[in-house]
Image (cartoon, rainbow, N blue to C red; front, side, top):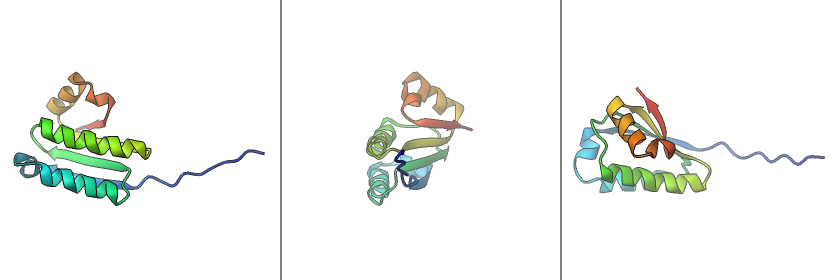
Length: 103
């Protein structure tokens, strides 16, 4: 007899970012991502189609979110990344941390 356990489906949250969100301080975005994870999201999809460039502060917020989601069996997906952003993630090795969906 085999015992099969079924894990519940991952709760997914989709966040759409714009240059306005990333232009100033990212504290509000960091807390917004943190709130999604605390509400149970295990998979956070971040749409960056309206973001020109990815800053180190934004990356730190995404890495923090990924760390918590990963413990729950999920992660962070970066959706609609521009070619420039995809190349940056590849050069830094972060394309192995995040799932990256290019434009």
